[in-house]
Length: 81
Image 1 (tube, rainbow, N blue to C red):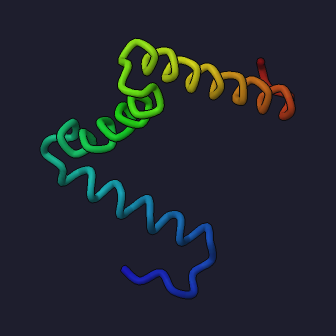
Image 2 (tube, rainbow, N blue to C red):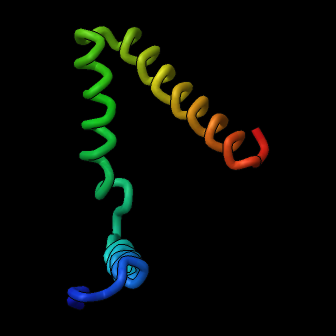
Image 3 (cartoon, rainbow, N blue to C red):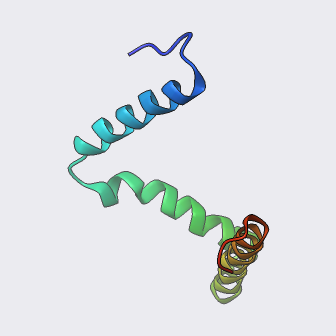
């Protein structure tokens, strides 16, 4: 389905439809996402110089930063913090 000339909101919907159709045809969801999960884990391992314990702490720090940013954004929007 071509989306040339569509407004951004409709392009977004076309993308969502394509994504849902693609996932509906995926028999093994875990296998499909395995390369991305491995790359994400390997990123921390490389940053930690190959030390798996240090990599785990870097991963936890990454998620803690995300939580902090989320809380700050909710506070700015006036949502629950």
